Length: 124
Image (cartoon, rainbow, N blue to C red; front, side, top):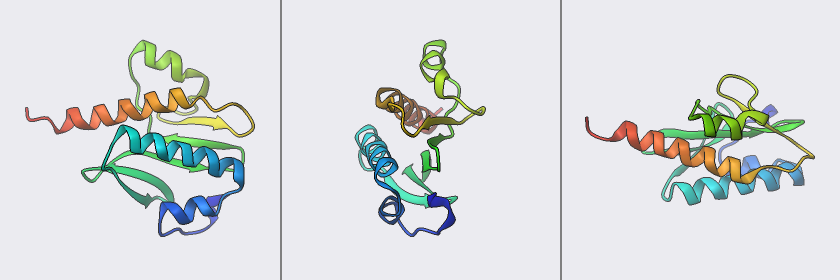
């Protein structure tokens, strides 16, 4: 879908999408902004990403049949139980278009990514 073109901003990426994936991607963008105030946006590897002090929080992309988040690292048993229905590859989750998107799970994933990045930045 959106991957055939090159985009100079998250806005231009989102504008290129049909209504359904655009609305899902817009909501993901809002969840990221709420979880990481001040995060910067960029296009990396042809996908929107949010950056926290230069490090990627999560990439998110719209495809023909799904919206994906990358990378989604392994977490606690509770985390994995909630993510399991959508986990596709080792560090990938996919939410099929035309099904209800679990924004609460996406919010949990983003919060976990932000927490991981903040832990990595703590002085030893």
